[in-house]
Image (cartoon, rainbow over all chains, first blue to last red; front, side):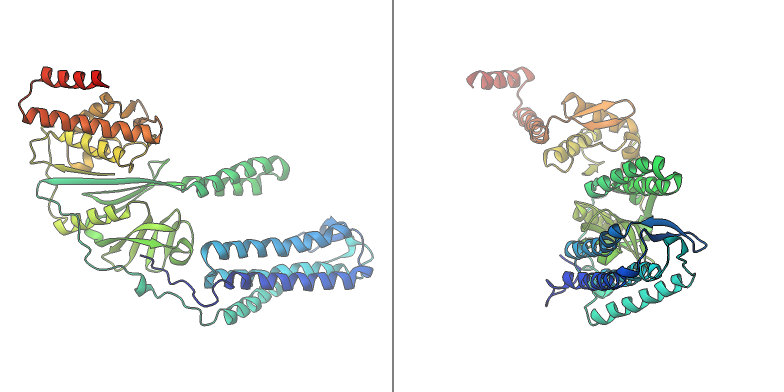
Length: 331
Length: 122
């Protein structure tokens, strides 16, 4: 059962729609560069310190490929993402809102340099930041217009069928379900970031390196998650650490279902997600255990064999959390 | 992996745990190299004594289906995907053989003789 309404008409062209503003921006940058070329110093100031003074320089020949790469690489990334996870509205809006400031930064560097005697004379004012933000709003707004009327699945539509039959538990029976879910993608991403972080610390100092190491560690931690269902309720832990532990007691659970979820559309991404009305641990798109809570919210954990987990949870809920499981001490 | 325990059954609880894990290895829901839940956790979840769980795990170890390592807990023996599943199914077959033989009133010697005869034929 698939809960996410997929775009239908013209949906194959939608990922390309994400790439178009990046191509247009590249054309704008190329034009501005070619027009201003006779008036550009060499090298060109391309990086500015907090005070607006130029502190980074690039040769004239290298600026063109660098500028184009800054626009085309993110554009390509967004197009690939759009193919992988569907050209959903939030993704298109992100792509459109990003292209404005990117294009602005590139064009601004060329125009600020144009006419300067040497690159050292080039100044940048603080007005560039609000201007870039304003442009993000403008291109984001264009994205809103482009995607107007795209169907967003209503949250109600995602709620699974009510009263799925639970696993029938006899009196005097106890049960336990567990599954360790691994994500190779998150593991590889985490490892890559760790290696990259460790590599750049000697080159750039601790700041950016530590950020990469931290992100890599987080990715690595979320690459393995164990879900457990027993008389206490649903427990989710990381595979590599005993703590932190998420436990949802049986008495907070109304019912459980197995559903297919889309990490991006339904949960807004990967890892531990908290959205309006729905939270959960997401390793991938696909089979997930979705638990309706007594407070009207949903808890989601992506795991294989979710149907068994849901049936057992429902069975346990039906039996009532009031009954203590029979305790065996005779062994 | 789903483990159901019938506390009213005549089958010892430790054997029920072993049978559930064996079944999970046989049907592939637990893979070679996977770690089984810690005995303490499982005992608490199922409401049984920790020694009951350990007895079940010990039985699986004797059958060559899991390894018990200090510090790492119980790990499903990794002899390749198919080999591990196949061995679990084989042990299940042996369990069935024993149950059927007992139901017919055969002695242990007679069962072993039967198996020996079966082996010599192939």
